[in-house]
Length: 470
Image 1 (cartoon, rainbow, N blue to C red):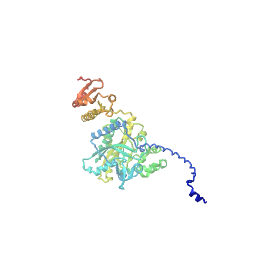
Image 2 (cartoon, rainbow, N blue to C red):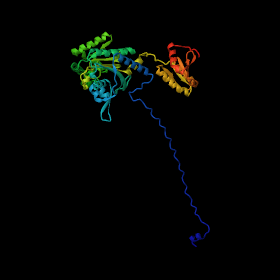
Image 3 (cartoon, rainbow, N blue to C red):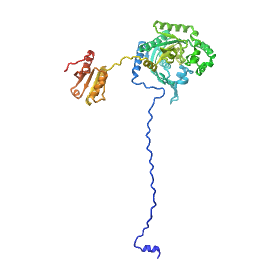
């Protein structure tokens, strides 16, 4: 019998046991937990600076002094854009100046125009004078400004890549009295903020007389070329007047024997300069005749001046607080009609730093004499309205509406040294009243909400301490 037949005939089902192959246990690799990356904290761009609340009193003090002087001398405020066509600064400041060659923030916008963030404001003011036909106004047109400027400069104490300046510009008059008044404004400003300074002053004459001087100056410096710093070797051909402004010690030594520009002034420039000095003498503005003062911008003619902090000359020169002068040819250079003009600008960060270093005392900050406290949501809602009523009545009032605890609010009121605290709770809201608490005497009085402004004014005017209990 074949095996196949026996399988068919067997009543029992034969099953074949197949042994399953042994499976290897897979080891599950533990994936490392992702390392939580700490996000890099945002940082200030190099050369920029935050102005924090503890410095704001200085800035506000300076601004108020500037605005007050502008009003006294009849200068109108002007705001010019931060962005201007790059060519405006190239034509005005000078192609071979450090500002144009090294320091301007320049880029091409989406329209393909080359624009720059303003490194100074005078060029923009002159452009506005031309664009808006200010030549047709009574002359001189007197303008002042306040705002940020931008230069890619080496950051250091008091020098930032975004920095603020205020400035005064007088356009449309060639009289020496304009130069003198600009210097008087600068002097009065520093006197009023309590910073002792010296006014360094010189005259560059006309472009013609200045050109004759440059020939002599270049001849002198070429004979000493081997002793000059690398920058001055470049200036020798590009911008020789800047040789007199170099801060390197070896170049300062050479400068001391250099020709002086006052010896090459034309007669009109001499007379103009002498008149400026006479005006300053008349009002007793102290100044120092500085034959090496030239300023760093190409547009200056005749009178130039700088404001130095009082102290060692070289150290003071390094920390110049501001400067300016006359720029009679700039308007015509930018396409306008010939217009004599002059102005000056002052760096605000340097002023604030100098004030802090000298520990200049600021006027006391006026503190509110009233504190408005509330207890409960309904009282908080009503207190918002009462707060606005006090503001409309020009009565300074403090609050802490985010606080729920009356105790915490009274502690804040006490720390502020207020004279009276107004307390508004649920009962006062329903009754239409306010509780006035004398913080010194601890006496309280209930007053109708509709009469609260009148009652508070009366108590502040009378300096009342106590109350009649009602």
